[in-house]
Image (cartoon, rainbow, N blue to C red; front, side, top):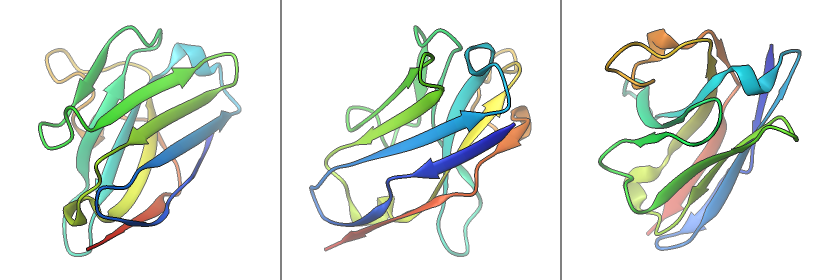
Length: 126
């Protein structure tokens, strides 16, 4: 399974970005997917997760109402729409694929994921 994240960049406070994650080498629709971020000197943090069908989504409290996770199974692509960006959103963003989510955790921990993309840098300037 290969995951290729893209769409990061430099944006001003309050701006928007849409990240994409293209999957190959797998049956994309059978995987649960997630986005994590990692700032310098910090651990990898959960951002959002989505079920295989896209009907269930889960978010970190810090991004609720600002970020939207979605997927297009026909295009083997995962998305993260990021609005109202803040300086504290600055990080490298990683997409990840999981065969199953843990009961009760719903994809919130890195250990639930089987495959990771290479990351894309998001920088929010004030």
